[in-house]
Length: 235
Image 1 (cartoon, rainbow, N blue to C red):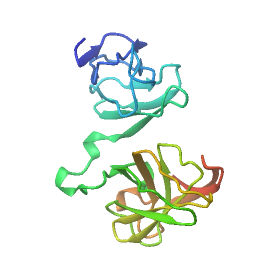
Image 2 (cartoon, rainbow, N blue to C red; image 1 turned 30 degrees about the vertical axis):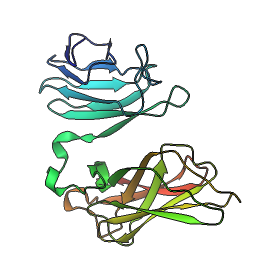
Image 3 (cartoon, rainbow, N blue to C red; image 1 turned 90 degrees about the vertical axis):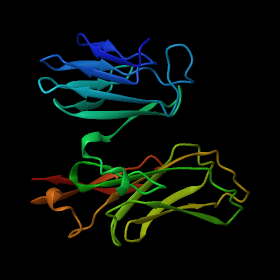
Image 4 (tube, one colour; image 1 turned 45 degrees about the vertical axis):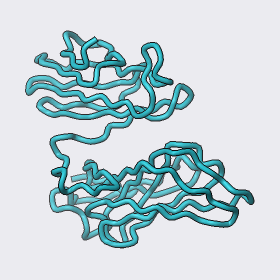
């Protein structure tokens, strides 16, 4: 099976060996991403990346293997989708519009900046956390260009936290610290994985193109059970 394929109709499934999918159709089509598991048979494992490119005439709606919407590749744009989790908790993540990524020289060596709508900044870092003894903490640094003191940050890790708590904050310009606290009473050794942080610029720190006329904050429940505030912008 080739690693690149052009969609011929709507409703086609993307095979596990196809790393790039394109469409030259003049209408919106739907494409199904492969199932996430261990990479055997027709499944893909965590870390698998699929790039989808739409021509100037039609969009491509991307859904997972059971039909849940993952993202929309607008006509004339290219987007990338990354597999996370496993067969028990699969999740496809849209990594951002490739044409909007900064030049390679502008990216930090220990993190990747991905632009999102509304002015948010996202950083990611592959990391194998050191052992954390009881009542101790571990700090990890991720470079996120554009982050400033006072910005709100949320963080995640794509492996079992084993009872650790995770928080994040901007410690200096372009620098985010992720903190793991061990309140369990015993030493914890996490598996190697990936940190993900999302930075929400404070008022006055939004990029000019993303500054909204109206700012609305939405109260949400986070995956760890805590409650946070997420800015929802309307122009």
